[in-house]
Amino acid sequence: MARILCIDYGLKRTGVAVTDPLQIIATGLTTVDSKELISFLKKYFQREPVELIVIGEPKNLDDSDTHATPLVNAIIVKLKKEFPQIPLKTVDERFTSKLAKQAMIEMGMKKKDRRNKRTVDEIAATIMLQEYMLSIS
Image 1 (tube, one colour):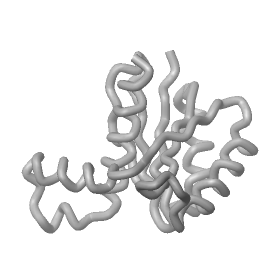
Image 2 (spheres, helix red, strand yellow):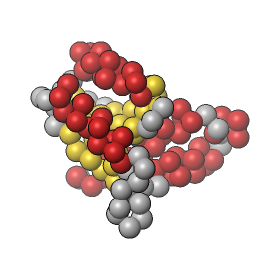
Image 3 (cartoon, rainbow, N blue to C red):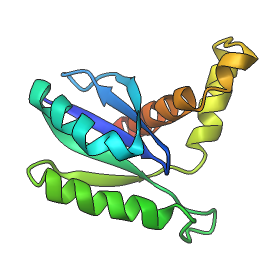
Image 4 (cartoon, rainbow, N blue to C red):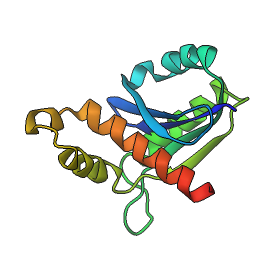
């Protein structure tokens, strides 16, 4: 089986998570500078088979768009153009950064380490991917 890859896209940084090849466990992969995302994915897809890209869709509590929604919509267009062979699905990303920060506290991470936004983005992508996997099982 191929992996599922999840993207928590942001203006500066993008968290990336993947499943194992059997699609049982979601694991944080990395955080990349957003401007480097497409080149990172090209290299990753050459090494690993990926059957689906999941990307967080930013929404407000009332389901309206956030300030980040146009940014995510633009990268979705780029992803579909660059990787037309890989299907893409959007998922609700509300509260994932908050959940990531809470998870870091529960894991016992030091306050200094919890301030690292790259780690927050990677964990948020992992949470989104895990929630997606639970929704399809």
